[in-house]
Length: 474
Image (tube, rainbow, N blue to C red; front, side):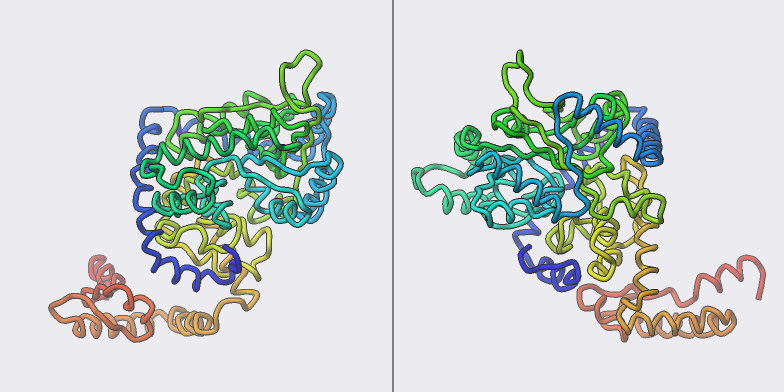
């Protein structure tokens, strides 16, 4: 959200916890994304085998990334496309702006693209007098509300139907004010009618890319609305924004990963539209752009190769980790303060903007492990969050009370007898303090916990003491 940064996570989270509309909007996610994934996974016995195959494809590709990027570039150019390499977001913005100016663009239609969000493409276009129009329904809704996406596949998941209706009435002022917008279908129909006119006004169309296929030089997008097709087929120029890890060797490899993508993302067996683009329109094509450009962004990803966070580059942006994350479901995506929310954002954001600017994010986890459990690419997200916590501590970014608390704990933990003695006294004292209620409403040094919930009292003995007794040791 405007004015928020990843450093503001605690303040953002506190604000969002008090947001009743957010609570209502997120309340149905279990019935859609979570239940939907569980259903389609149960209907596909080979799902885990597909996950292993998808992981192996990405591991092989990342181990040979330079080779496959070169092959993809050669094939893309042979098909008549243009390839542009951007080391950072500033270069990507400059490339896109130059292409738009050369086309004399006054309007740009955009399909959904997280890379466009990462680069701030909309802000750049508006600053240069070019009107960007988001054609994905969720992206369109947040654009007219002047907000950023709160989810990587469902940008407007944080909004209720009433909020969307209010925004439509405030924006679409030329329509009948007495029209009925109480049903979701009415909202969808109105957005379709508004956007249909925009498709024919833009000189440039911008989309993202789920995959770049080295074998054919193609880019692939998956959508459920068909807006991506219209955004790239109708304008004279099609610009694809992709990060360098999106490349896969073959179409067969892409199809394997696609089988786990939709199931993990939306609980569908396959997305409604899977669209391949290979170069500009040929002489005998009925439609398509005159020019096809692909901007490939690095922005810190090359530095992740071969390092502690190398496996994060397998991410296919399905959003399953945040759909199942109790922290994300409590605070929503805007609390994370940058482009990528949830567990994947807690790992990727520090890698792209630095742990100095994202230190709270790896701590925004219960470590329940659900994110790793459902990740179609088997990315060890909790383990990498722990690594970021270690770097945060090593750089002295951990808050002073936490650092002092860890030092105090270490002083006891490295002295086993003292540790057992002190923890035994503490457990007994807490049990007596709780009494018959078995819980504590206030607890010294744990005000952050007891401010919102009661603390369950220990049974009176430590696990170590009970284990030693079971083993017959003193």
